[in-house]
Length: 479
Image (cartoon, rainbow, N blue to C red):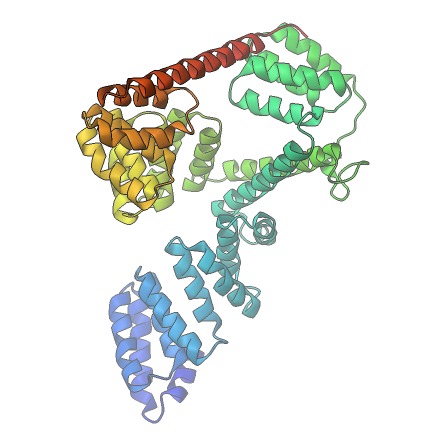
């Protein structure tokens, strides 16, 4: 800091001594947490030296610390216009964009900051988090990996690393689904996913089918054993455990390139890529769990539960995360969605209201608000939100359907028809067709109502047939 003050004094000539004293005063105020007072000193100094980019960059730092991110961005840009080499300005420009939830706009400044100062761990961590948010998962993982030795006690690091690996695994899974939808390797992965969703019969069916084609695949009989154990069949689990122990050892998940004797993009190669990435993700998760309790740990647990369709349990984890990091907008949105998906509309609405104040024009948030009021049988209160959602995004079919339902409930049948017609295009369970039939009948269009009712019955029958097939498939049989 002393060296910086000397440099600034030179740039503030001719009356250097008073400026140095003022800079030292600003430094002391900032150190005491009095950032607004320190910023006022820099603002005064800039009036006498408006072309000093270092003063401008330091003012941006104080703005950032005071939570005035938009002003920090303006100051950083002004400093960079004067001197594009200022690493501090690039760093806090990216950091401010990230804090404002704009990771796309944070990536380039943070890359520039890191290129100028490769040893800056904060720059690397923020860049990794920005890359994770914009779904550049492989590059994000590389930065997180570089930080493990120095920041091993930081839960954000292991959270980001787990999510980066798991997202890469999901992309490889999508390639496998697209290229080989009938592959027994894919059946293994589907079976394991169904186990996590507690659909044990369906999971065991997939795993047994895979075992018939790949009887010597390492880990497959262990997965079958786990499925039988969770379903309450310890005796059948023991049979599969014995089969697993008898297998020759061959686990390609430890390899990198190529992951297996087959090509990397073959079903076998993709399967082992997914296995390797999930093993790395599990190691990162275990490391995160070994650290003191953190918001990052509960957020990751919540995301996994959301992904498994366990919204009520997920909401509890989001709440724990928020207790450790109050006011975090990402956590607040996660909790709102989990409560909504768990049909706790009364609990969701206060959080949705916070989201609306933050993002008043978001069709998704307006839809959540209106649908929550519908769930609470308050269609009058639902209208404002749902009309706003449809106005902002007329192609958002869930919002169109909910708005049509609100109009229907309020007896505004002619207004309900066009929205229910639009939503019926994506109707899977028949409910929108049934509602549309009611609206048509109410406006005297009996033929259209009858057509909708026939379509409703067909959709309901198809849904019932699917349910029965799943029920049959979900029956658990012996190995």
